[in-house]
Length: 151
Image 1 (cartoon, rainbow, N blue to C red):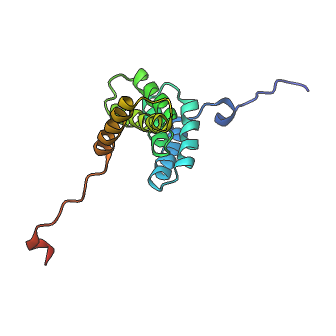
Image 2: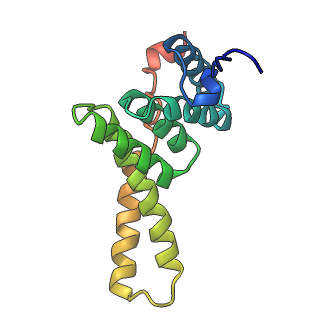
C-alpha cells in the first residue's frame, strides 16, 4: 500500500461513545425499564457503563435494573460502585438497602431449610423475615370514605 491509511475506530469498536450516543442508549434503557423489559435495559446500561465507568448515575441505573430483575448480588455491586464514585448520591441508599433485604430473604430461606439451624436461630430468623416482609410490602390502597364510595 502506498501512503498512510488512517483507521478511524467507531465508538462501538473502542468501547467509547459520544455523549449523544450515551444519552440515546440511556433513553432506550429507561424506556425498556418502564416497559418492563428489564433484560433489554440491563444490556443497554451495560454498554453505557463500559464506556462511562466513572459515571455514578449509570451505575445507579444499572443497579436499579438489576434490582428489578431480582438480581440482588449484581444490584449491590452496581449500587456500591455508584456510591464509591459519588458518596453524596443519596438516592442509591434506599435501593442498596432493598437489595440487601433481598439477599437476606434468600439467605434466611436457605437457612430455614437447613437441618443445621438451632431452634432459637430458627425463631429469630422467622421473626426477622416477618419484619422484613412487613417493611417492604407495598402499602395498601387507602380506603375511600363511605360518602365518596357511593357517589
